[in-house]
Structures are given as structure tokens and as C-alpha cells.
Amino acid sequence: MDIQKIISDLVSKLTGNKDLIAKFTADPLKAIKDLLGIDLDPSQLGDVVKGVTGQLGDITGDAAKQAGGILSKLKSIFGRK
Image 1: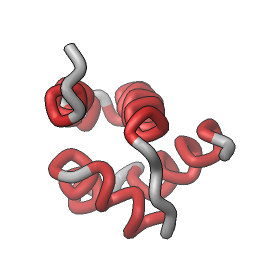
Image 2: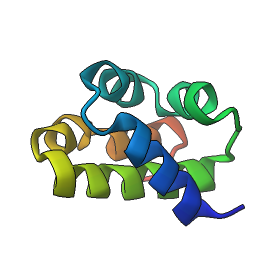
Image 3: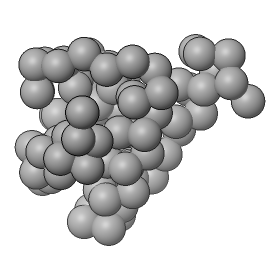
Image 4: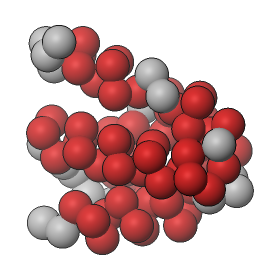
């Protein structure tokens, strides 16, 4: 699975759309499945969320700040520290 392509596709769909960014922030796994129609395993999900959050920060600034806690939430969900 091409993680970079997934990140690129998500960033293009999320850019400038506060509603989609809010959905991604609240539940990244569901947002990815809804937007792209794919399921990811936890390790892939973490990589995608980190990449998307980083690129959104480059594009929107505030969106990345809002999404900044997503990775820590994911880590706690999957028992990582």
C-alpha cells in the first residue's frame, strides 16, 4: 500500500474543508475509510495521520494545531506511549 499516495489524496480532500478536517480530527480511521474507501491497520494509520497532519500544517497552520493531538490519541488507543 502506497502510504505517500494515501497521504497526498487525503490532504487534497481535506485542504480548505473545515468540516472534513473536523471529521478527520475526531475519528481519523472513519474519515480515511469514508474519504478513500480503504481500511488501514494501526501502524499504517499512525503513519498516515502523522503525514497528513504535517502536510496540513504546511498548508493551513491552524488545522495542524487542531489535529496535533490526533497522534497522541491514537497512541493511547493502541497502547503505545
